[in-house]
Amino acid sequence: MKIGILKEDQDRRVSLTPDTLAKNAQLVAQYLLEKDAGQSAGYADAAYGDTVSVHDRATILREADLIVSIHPPNEADLAQIKPQTVLVSLFQPYFDQEVSDRLRQRTLRAFSLDMIPRTTLAQAMDVLSSMASVSGYQAVLMAANHLPRYFPMMITAAGSIRPAKVLVLGAGVAGLQAIATAKRLGAMVEAFDVRKAAKEEVESLGAKFVEVAGARDDAGAGGYAVDQSEEFLQRQQQEVQNRATKSDVIIATAQIRGRKAPILVRKESIAQMKPGSVIVDLAASTGGNCELTEDQKIIERHGVTIIGNSNLAETMPQDASSLFSNNLMNFLRLLIVEGELQLDLDNEIIAGSYITP
Image 1 (cartoon, rainbow, N blue to C red):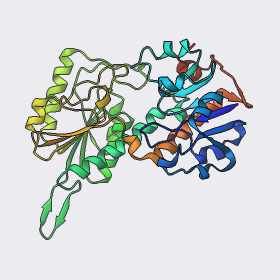
Image 2: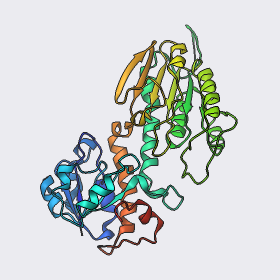
Image 3: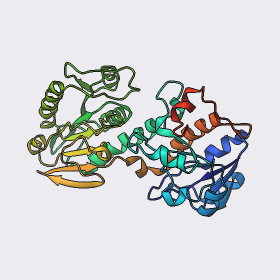
Image 4: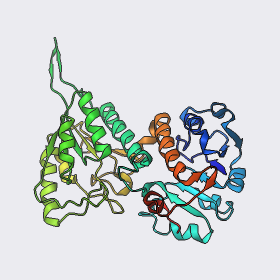
């Protein structure tokens, strides 16, 4: 079994790290590493030692039996891959609904890591949660760097500084990490989520939970929020506006799987926020929770800085790579037994992530 590790295009992370490979020698595989694949994450080719052989991209695409990457190979790459090769990546079929057909037409087999069921059994393989945790942490640090005042309360000889007020929209993994980070920095934090189960987690981190009555919950949604009624959305937007106008920082993380992100912060609310306030929108790639968000841009509107970035995990490439690598290896151990590929489609994790049946 030859496993190819591709270098990411415009992303500093790498899908498998030297430490992960060293700890999993029992997988009995040959690893083909694309030259400098881990360089930007702090992992030089030499750090992999004799666990890998280093090749150019074309060789890996041509020879590997299984290819791993964070972002899927592009169409030019796919044309060079031999039939029946297994690809493991983040294909996001909920947003690219034709990806499965394109791969099947090339007789390729693919597993999408974002489709792994978000269950207790699959926690060790949940790359979405791992990357969301990094993003939540980085979102608060980015907000702190752009905010023209302190996060913590300060009592000095020159006077007292009140703590910053942070509002977190969405209390999933990214939101909870944002809450924890903002609290460590000394801010006053409150959080909003439509899922009732989030309340206990939010309060356990020392934040205030903002609850809007009438939310529709779905325990079978895999931890994701679900669509809400128009009446609820109007009440929600009004409550968010009331909170937003009093906040110094908003960290927006709310997403609905396979759908455009809900608009929670209207442009009218932004116009009423305090000058110097900061919004970090982690839902930018799916439209954003803030009505004025522009994906992959930092803009200023009405004196408010709006940062649209759904890929903040890439800004902390070393630890993000390490976490992704561990998740990925745990998944590969399900697929590869004694050096051979074994697709047990009775296994809900394998079946759920297999997008080219």
